Length: 207
Image (cartoon, rainbow, N blue to C red):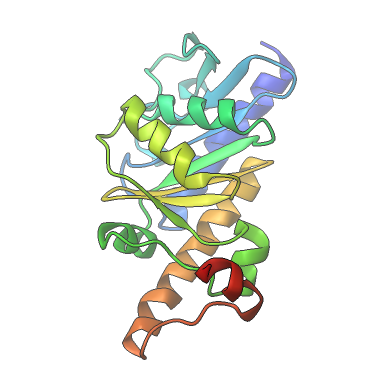
């Protein structure tokens, strides 16, 4: 197998286990993937397998047509979403989809996270918008995620969780953690009378 594919498989395995370690997913929830540079392949976590039990050979290799090339298990149910994001965002090299607590709480409330933190604006590129609800694994959900992301680095999925992207998968994981921090602060600030938009974003966001 190509060395770049093997390296991508290692990155996906490590990131999936790190997602679990950091409490961004539980059990078999969530998924992550890497686009293999200069190829037609992506590498993605398998479906219905706990991260702690996952091995290198469990990671799935897919082509951009959604056909499985390697792996002894089926790919994540959200393969359509990963493929759609890679198709829409050529600069994205890694994706994480989590069920993190605070981000998911905001999504279940049917809200987006406005641009309230400088690190959120500079790293995620603005608000964390809410994607419309669709059933897991469907092409509708995939398109809703693409629409909610726009050109930004993270979005919420209604009644579902968080999607974060980056040039590298480690960037996507960092972006998911920034969403969790922003979501926590957003929830707490509502107790104190409501969040305020970062001043240099206020005119643009409220327009």
